[in-house]
Length: 405
Image (cartoon, rainbow, N blue to C red; front, side):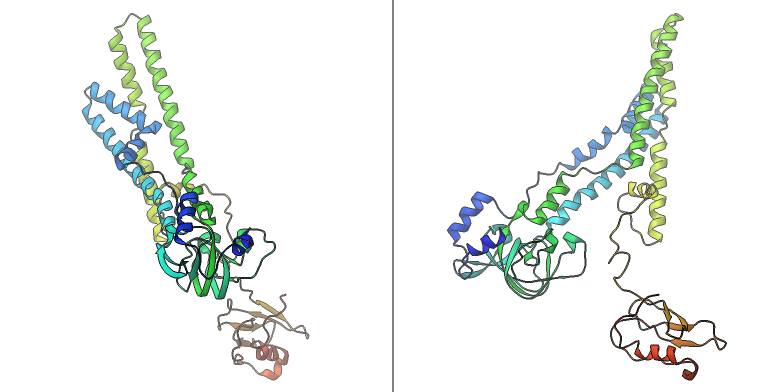
């Protein structure tokens, strides 16, 4: 499909303004559609829909009717604290999609009517010719037709921080977009080189558009604690209603006044509601957040502290995240069966070669690992005593890798 697009394009002159306008009317602008955001007051009121919050509101209202204003004030304060914290956390999470949209450049260099122009990126259409240079963000999915020493950072799509080398060669088959070395994806950053590409997809039809659309349609997951609080609120509501009904029925059988029975039942139901529970939970999570911050782990969403405590298995990318994609020799065995332990990590020119089971406790400075050429490590023991170990130390800066034992 990409090769067909390249064949049908006039690389020298690009599209005409009239043709570009026709395609934009047909396919839409190069931007992401989004529903207008709800006003802040509506987002704030949405927090009161929670079962526990509704139960506390009912409890506060009953306290006012019974003249227990101290209880009503304390319950109302608890509601305001919990609702405000939830509103702030939800507001932060909604900014994630907006941050993705900022990765799209405002303008780009495009060939139109035979002239190289600096136009708005949202005006690009499939078939446009775009010029890229170092430091540019790719404004749309491009099939590269010319590429000189081009390396593009695709970390916002793949998570890999290492820049990917791009070319204009034809690729007959590739499994996955990350293997398309002749495609520049929207939102990625040109780290080096220059390139010319043909726009093959814009807006939501691009690979980056898939990510934005997925985040827009994805609902914020509820943490185990939030689910437990919802269940507790529903159970307490059912129990409170059951208590009121039972007391009223029993009192009517005993011949008591109906209003008095309702007052007693409501009072017992209100007493059963733990109005301090939401505050206790919020304060506990805040303490956990501060403890995580003291260990250089910043928690943006407060419920994530509790979720982290529920984790049993972590699935993560190993290379580049937990490891550096570097192999290190830690133990050496010579042909004479002399053994040595090697200290140091990666390609750092530091460490020691410790000889095993020797009467002189011989020690060699320097790490014996593969890597860039460097000077042979100085010897701190008599070389004649251990010629094999000395030889290994001398050639450690010449051999790119060793056998691992």
